[in-house]
Image (cartoon, rainbow, N blue to C red; front, top):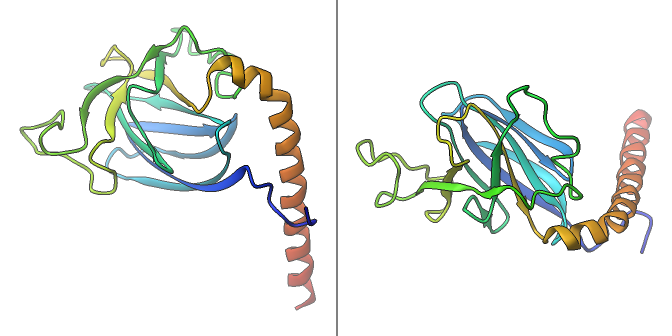
Length: 193
C-alpha cells in the first residue's frame, strides 16, 4: 500500500438525514453531522469502515412525536435499526455511539410508515420526501411521544463488533495518519503558491 492509499475496506459514504426536530449523527463515535430543522434534509460525507462501523443518531423532538428518515449507501432507516429513550437524567450511556457498545437489549426501531404516498404516516397531507427511497421508513422508538431518543444501525452483530473492535481501531488510526499526511501535504502546497 502506498503512503496515500486509502485501505480498501474504508469507503467515502454519503449520509442523508431528515429528523423531527433535531439530531446528531455518529460513525463509530465520530460526529459526522447534525441538524435542527425538520423541514430540511441534511447531507454529509463520512468515511465508513465497510461491514464494520456502527451508525448512531441522537434524536430530539419538541412536540407531537418525532421521527427520522435516514440513508447511507444502500442502507435506509427501517426496523433493522434499534432505538431507545435517553435516560430521564439526560445522561447518554458511555460509548453508546461506538462499534463496541452492547445494544442487544435495545428494541427494534418502530416504523411509523414508509416514504411513499401509500404508506406515509401522514396520509391526510400526503407527506413524503423525494430525496429518500420509497422504502425508507420513518422511525423512532416505540414511545412516539419520547422527546430524546438514541438509534443505531449495526453492520455486524455485537459479538463480531466486539471481536473486531481492536482491529478496527488500528485501521482507523492508520487511515487518520494517511488523511493527516494528505492535509499537511496540501497545506504545504498551498503555502508555496
